Image (cartoon, rainbow, N blue to C red):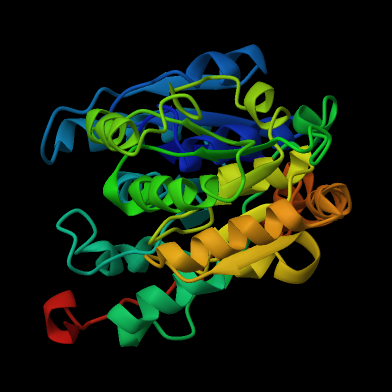
Length: 375
């Protein structure tokens, strides 16, 4: 099967990593995937090329570009794929239209995060469903979110959870609890408000008054780096909270941790959660997005409500006092192996492609309601 993945770029991000890992898994079982990037390539391009996957960038300028649409249409006409698989809404505008114009039998879109009808880029997504055979959501939460924004889409789409290549994280697994009485917490994510690192630092400051051997690593870069550094200094945490910046090899960070923390106020289904589970880490997370769909709290970790510093501190203290961190980490690793591996995700997409190829004329019905009608 020839599969053309179309995504905005291959800069480091969750959707981009999923697209590359999915293409690699598809190639391993005999399919022929290519990756088209609309705006540019990025740091993940080398990973795809090293796996033998063709990557072509169309370098779209800012704004709507009919020239880019024509170039993608011509490229699809040359390789004649069986499936065009677009990732997120911005790529779908070009990929679905080009797929229709070049007579590709099946067009699939994956929405890697909940779509907001208030977002300028995503406002017209529903109008491109006339060119689309199926919409895939990475969580039931994401599916419900778009249906709440656009009631006309109720019943459309299916859920396929993201996956990670588990073996990349289990060759050198974590050993949670092995450093007692010291304990190392870690968080990975862009330093932006929605990731709520400031709440995590405040909760950690309170925990530190009770657990002198606690340490926190925060991995990631972003506009709040200086603000968080000032917060850490103001709370007197310079010796035990470390801002490590962006890191390319996350596995080498995760396997040093005892407990992984997601303090976010909003998420889709974060790839780093799956990576932490694959590494064998117990998880503390806020109840957001699709996290509860893949992470059972009792056996793998602890949940708390977002924006609640006291609840986050309590969860962190419960983790410190847990006598079976290793067991919870092992349960997380086993769940990742059985349900969250890239091979599992790839098989589910393969089954979807084949089912759609049997009836390629069936498209998602066009939704007439405008987003402004259902604000």
